[in-house]
Length: 305
View: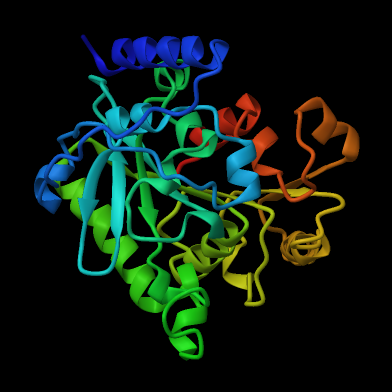
């Protein structure tokens, strides 16, 4: 039985529970964590779901059970952060890798909250993997690197994904995965994220402009320079009436890249676009974006020069 057969059975059971008025599954016992090396290739038994939804947009997009995430993403960790890794079942000689950076609602150290939404699930559906087999690296940002951490007055604590130590840890993790799995295509490393995750996308491509083949920031912002990103394919997505991060925080980046002759495009969602996608939160551009097959086809078509 492969991972997708397991997933189909899990989703069918979840649907039956929903129809009979049952809620989330209770208390599967957590198994011991694998070592970082082992986690690249091993999966673990399901854990219990967290009791609270921590982010409105991620909660609105949640369609997979935590059990399915546990089945598909293996655990890993390093000295800086914990992460999950999806390993594709494919015989292709070279396979791309997606680095997915979550939003503020998934900050923590439980190594599960960030993969319980449709965002993380969208990359690893059977249909997607048949079209575009890929590794998916989904790290979780520890609270100590954010304003929500134990030391919010610490200058380092407010940097989040843009903290230099975090960025270095992400790069080291990519290199470790590539070293363990010889079929990772280092010319097709993609990066995407929503909200705080999109800020992390801008920060990573600014710090490592020659590493990534394409970037998809969603509802993000960036106060730094984009002048070194002219050659990087970037597709920006944002809600027209976003009140959390106003759309002009990214239109200004698009305009600057266009002025420099950059390879950039931008989709701005209207109220009608959101309504068609069932989205009521103006900051929820992640929902239609990670359901957009055109975006995925475009992204996987990019290759580092």
